[in-house]
Length: 128
Image (spheres, rainbow, N blue to C red):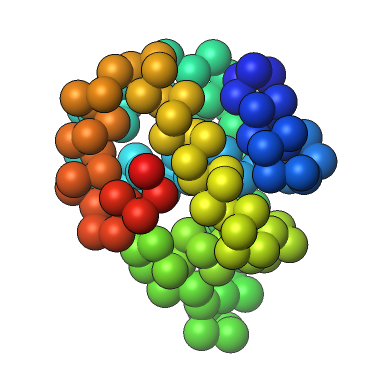
């Protein structure tokens, strides 16, 4: 995870803590929206991914109570964008982070696996 956090932090110009939270949110999103087997393959090849996801899931769950009261972020990529925006990230930073995470996943899990994930989630090709 350290390698991916460093890549994301450097590329997006954000603090490592924010990078790790963003990665966790993205991986949780992929697991929720994408094909389970392929996403689990990606998660399994990223050391520390499940821990990052757990940390992000706690924050997401805590936020969901507030989201329920305020209308929430919605689902799909827009919901993810809302969560990432909650970390103080701009749209440009979100796109950079998404490209880095997917690029890293492609390096570790292979083009076919990431391609299947992207093909199963509407709008994901914009991040590739």
